[in-house]
Length: 193
Image 1 (tube, helix red, strand yellow):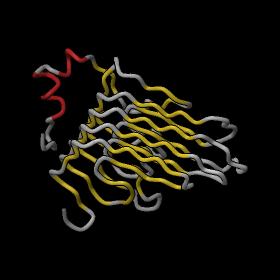
Image 2 (spheres, helix red, strand yellow; image 1 turned 30 degrees about the vertical axis):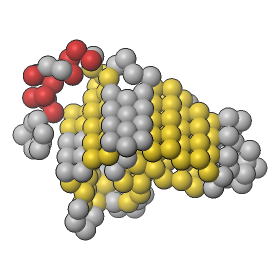
Image 3 (cartoon, one colour; image 1 turned 90 degrees about the vertical axis):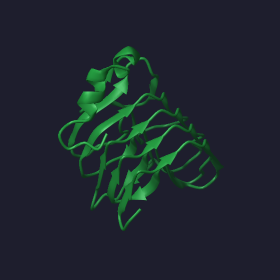
Image 4 (cartoon, helix red, strand yellow; image 1 turned 135 degrees about the horizontal axis):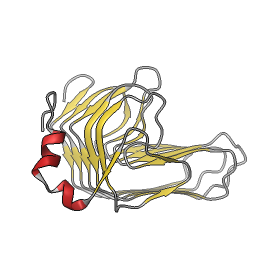
């Protein structure tokens, strides 16, 4: 780990958060920020259960919770195999609420995501929602700039929630993920696989 760069790190433990706070950022490797994440993985299950009362921001991802909206982040050669489950019991008076959940990143505002895969199921359950900003995806739950390449997800995994985001992602079978061809696709010219 150096300034704004995380490399060759992993999480294999489950993360289980229950809270009444209104803002939460959870990532298997990094919760919030910018910089670079390279050659990292998460195999632990991530569960967030929150009961906010005013407004809420929930960003949950297998590798990253959310990037800084101004400077962005680069993620490469990373994978998630853990199940990600976000549950918000929404009793808020505000309609300015956000819930983004993704296998690699909850939200990615800028920067490149490349050579990644997710094989975990993703659940984004928000009760009593109306006009909220919700997004759920195998790779990211929110993406503002389509700047991704070589990102894969297990086609048989559950991706459940409002506003399913599958931009710049490729579904593959479990059998294909075990092949040499899949490995070669992940270990492209600029990859550290």
